[in-house]
Image (cartoon, rainbow, N blue to C red):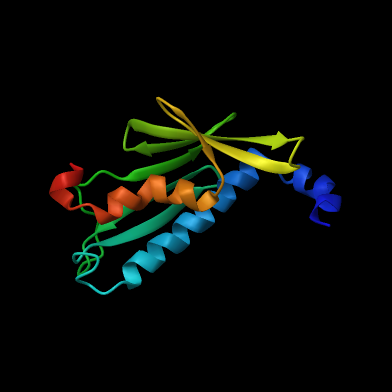
Length: 142
């Protein structure tokens, strides 16, 4: 049944749409993290900032003052012409690419760095982009 909608699905299989979906999930995940009990998040709080149609970042903020934690790197999500880059400040962590799959009639996503990793879920991209950043102790992450 769902396969009859392949035309619309293929038309939506663009890098911009993929980028927008990633940002939506990351924004929600940051909000959910901040809603955890204080001890579960070790007193930490993060902010999602969409800078433009091609750039966003996640940064740790001081829970009392809501100002940036200057000694903690930020996670940048950047839309490039042929890929989406996930960076920790200037360090490229991984890239995301999308491709129409003519066999499954789905928009396949790949995360690439030293190894190529198939990705079945936009949520895996969010987890890889911000999961360790938010859950590791600050000293472990630096």
